[in-house]
Figure 1: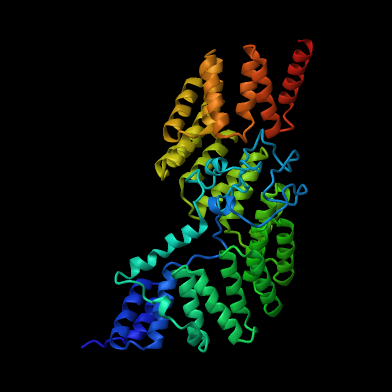
Figure 2: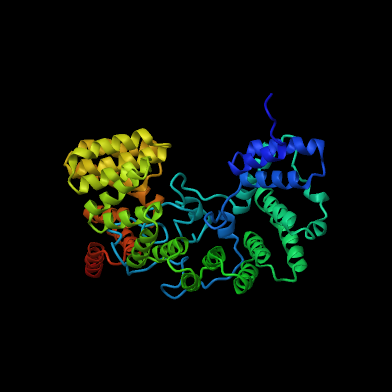
Amino acid sequence: MGLETEPLLQAWSYFRRRKFELCSQTCSRILEQEPYDQVAWSLKTRALTEMVYVDEIDVDQEGIAEMMLDENAIAQVARPGTSLKQAVGKKFDGPSPAVRPVTQSGRPISGFVRPSTQSGRPGTMEQAIKTPRTASTARPITSTSGRYVRLGTASMLTNPDGPFINLSRLNLANYVQHPYLAKTLFEYIFHHENDAKNALELAALATEESNFKDWWWKVQLGKCYYRLGLYREAEKQFKSALTQQNMVDIFLYLGKVYIRMDQPLTALTVFKQGLDRFPKEVSILCAVARIHEEMNNMSSATEYYKEVLKQDNTNIEAIACIGSNHFYTDQPEIALRFYRRLLQMGVYNCQLFNNLGMCCFYAQQYDMILTSFERALSLAENEGDVAEVWYNLGHVAVGIGDLNLAYQCFKLTLSNNNDHAEAYNNLAVLEMRKNHVEQARALLQTSSSLAPHMYEPHVNFAFLSEKIGDLQSSYVAAQKSAAAFPDHVETQQLIEKLRQHFAVI
């Protein structure tokens, strides 16, 4: 006869092995027999929280509602280099847009996609909907609060009979007498139910109960204020917590508040203070590198990413960003080494093989190009990924002089992603070589409407219009190109030439 394990011990064992579903079910059976068992109740609460837990430091997306309906006042005309919301302007620390593609806000595309990678606040709702935000979709989420509600639907899936805890019936004041239970309940309300208001009420009561001396509750208050959009209140709570306890997380939370308030220099100051207290801390170094990257200080960002790799040589974000930077600074062989390192670490996805294929092409390792792109196509998870692979194959075809193959590749790009502005631009150039002027003009107009921040379709349209004698259209397009990329020499020469034409008229 086998010995039966004590149910509570079994549940705790499941929790330690991260089998949260089984832990929750075991606790439910205990609670059916003993409804007032505080240990089982607390353990089930923790298990349900862990099932839907999302790290507040890393996940930070700004939805259309937050962008367009934000009542926090920020400087409309910020000084250069002090704002993440303003376009970068003329100076580029590193490759220009002629070499490295830029986002709508005028910043070079990063080597690693993360929330708010495509930084920059669109001016209109139409622009917000068109702004590329992530690798898989061109549209931002409608609202951050809506996203938290959708995450919270996991609570319905785990409890078919309804929520485990009925928040409306709870007397929160009773729970703050028991610190451990209060903390467990707070995590449940904040992460599982995604109810920031009730969580805020509980945190406020608990802070008062602890005579405002418990730094943990101050951090939780700050998190609630942040989620509710009250950034100044969140800032006060995080600063107060820092005076009592130095924690890496608090520095990261405080920096996140300043970034949302569009104060990147203040965020950098906070992170520098964090590095003074916790030298060489990887998460803070990464946060500093991201801000430098968003502010277009590529050389500083690369230095910080290298510092990250000295401390943690398996940091995927740092390896990807440094590899991307080497690729765009005309060092594809070195970029290839970084991407191969990712492959050795077990990263195995479409994007990595896509990058490997381009590095092999520019490093003239022709034997590996097609193999990499074939692997990328086989690993593609959606049509957007497939479109990017075909687009890069089109570039390879142009490089080897096979324009018919390039034409087919760009067509396949558009068949997978009908909003691919770069493919429209390149198809237009191929049509121009065949003297198909009207098709080229139509393709360039489509490209410039899809991506007004790109200078290439504007300048191509300007040259084409000038060639067929439509000087007014040429001048308008050239001006748009100059606004997108002020240092482009050919655009400036065309504008000067057109001005001389108009002076003669």
